Image (cartoon, rainbow, N blue to C red; front, side, top):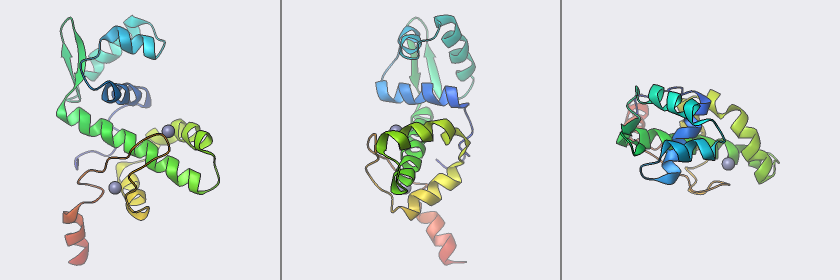
Length: 150
Ligand SMILES: [Zn+2]
Ligand SMILES: [Zn+2]
């Protein structure tokens, strides 16, 4: 995913997107509101705003699901969380501390920075709270060719 900077969604909306990825299929708005302990009308409003992006698709009477692009973006969001978490855990935080701490600021870290840290950590496959999936960006052959050619 090359044409994103990581700031496409607010932190709150990013959490919804990660939840949709975790669920994997069509998710009813009611499930989202229950999971996040929020009023259904709040979620409905947010979902309407998110439908304006090309990340989610609203299926009338059934709920919402990720588009292909939304799935890729959600996978990036998860990678951002887990890469930063690993970085913190390397510097003495416990797994739980690292996970909680990163949740506070992950939305402020750009994709470019995440890709660089991912690269310097050697593209680890396992994070503290789950697997890390890499995309063609963080291990991008095209970027390597550019850097070789100067
Ligand atoms: Zn975590
Ligand atoms: Zn990577």
